[in-house]
Image (tube, rainbow, N blue to C red; front, side):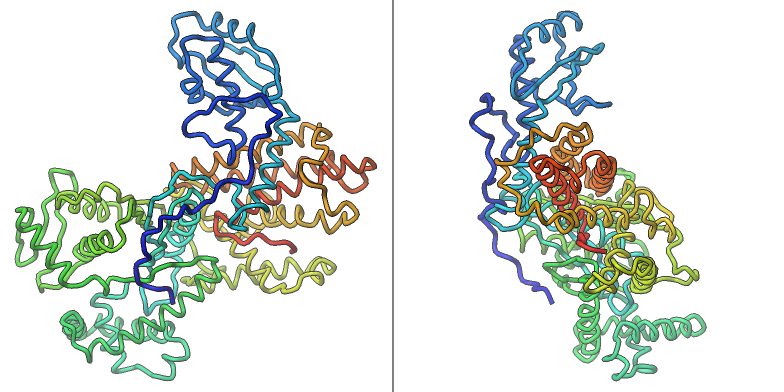
Length: 615
C-alpha cells in the first residue's frame, strides 16, 4: 500500500535540461521569453516568422508578433492575422511591406497574403531534420532514461495534489468512479510532463453511517472465511441484505447510527472490524488500479480527518459569525453568493461531508504546502464543491484560491451487454473476452503473441478509456459496446492497431537496422506531401500537451492521437519502406515511422494507456 506520510518538499527539477539543441549551421534567432526550442522545435519557426514581421513593420517587437503566430488552416503551416497589431496603415500595405522585404532562408521558404492574413511555410528540409532529431534525442538520450518528447518546464518548482477516484470501501469498484479515475490519472501524468511535482491522492469513502449499517449486518451475516476470500464482495452482500431489512424495520437504522456514533467517539471495539475492512478494501482496489495502469502516492480517507480539525473549523466559522442554527443543525448561509445554505453539522451532532472536506483541506495544506490542489469530481457535485471552496475563502485561507474543481458528465447506459448493473471488473472481463475472440481470427498473428489474454485485456481497457476521453469531459456520453470495441473509426482498438503497425516496421525490415544516427539520415529525401504532414503533426505535439494543461481536457490528446494515426494511414501506400530500392530513402522513411510510433506511444502513455507492440 502507498505511504500516507508527506513527501519532503522537492527542490530538484522534475526535468533535466534537454539533450537536443538547435544546430549552429542555421540562421541565429533571437530569444523569446516563454519559448523553449530545445523541447519544441516549432518554437524556432514561430520566432523566425515573428522576426520577419517585426523587421518589416516597425515598431513591432519579435515578442509582440510571436504571440500572434498561430497554426494555419487548410495546408498552411502558420498564419498571422495582421489586424491584431492595430497598426495605422492599411492591411494590404502592411502585407506588401512584409512580402517585399522577405528573403527565403533555412527557416521559412515562403509567405503569401490572403485578405487580412499572412501565411508562412516552413523550409521542409529543416523542419523534417529538426523534428526527427528532437524526437529521437528526447525519447532515447534523456538524463531520466525516460521518453520526454512533449514534456516542458511550466510547473518547475511547484507542487500539485490531485485527488481522484475516491471509491467507497466495502463496495466493489463501481463504474460510477471510472471517469474520475481515468481523468485523474491523465491529469497526474499531464502535470508531471509539465514539470510539476505531483501527489496523486485517493480520498476513500471510508466513514459514515453506512459503516454502522454494515457493522450491524456483519454481526448477523458476517463470515470470517468469506471476508478473507473476497472482502469487498462479502461486505457488499451484507450491505444489500441489511439495507433491505432496514427498509422494513426502522430500528436497524437507529442501531446503525448508534454504532457509527461509537466509531466517531473512538470506541476501539466498534473500530476494530472497520479497520480490517478498510485494509482489505485498499488491497483489492490496488489490484484494480494496477490493471488500469493507475497509481496513487497516498491513500487517505474521510476517517483520517481528525475530529479536532472539524471542531476547529466550526469554531472559526462561528467566530466569523458565518453560522446559523436550524433545529439543532448548523448551516453557513451562502445565499448572497447564490450558493444556498450549506449544512456543516447534522442535528444529531455528527459531522457531514462538507465539514470533513473543510477540515481535510486545511490538514492537507498544513502538511503538503501545495501550490495547487485539484479535485476530480462529477458535475453533479458542482454545488457542493462551490460551497466548499467559498467557505474556505470566507474563512480567510489565502490558498483557497489555488483549489480547482475538474468536473465531468455522466456515463449513460453503462451496463454489461446483458443489461445488468455494473462493476468495473465485469466490464473489463467482457471487453477482454470480445477482443480475445477477435484476435483469434488471425491465427499467425495470434500465435506470435506471448500473452494473448493480457493483450486482449489491454485492448479492452484502451477501448473503455478512449470512449471516455474522446469528447469534452463535461459532456454526458452513451456507453456503446459495439463502438468501443471496433477496430474501425476513432476507437481505442484502432489507436492500438496503429501503434502495433508502426512497431512492426523494424521486424518486417531487419536489413535496414540499425538505423544511422539521426544526423546521418538523408531526411532531405522525405519529399512526399504525406511525409511532410506527419512531420508537421509530430512537431505540434509539445503544444498539444501545453494546451491540455490549460484546459484539463484529455480529448485534445485523444484528437491528436487520431489525427496522427489517420496521417500515418494515408502515407502507407505512398511512403513505402518495404520494396523501396533506394536504401537511404527507405531508412529515412523508417526513421519517420519510428518517430511517429514514439510520439503516438507518448500520447497513449499520457492517457494512462499501455501501448502494445503486437496484437
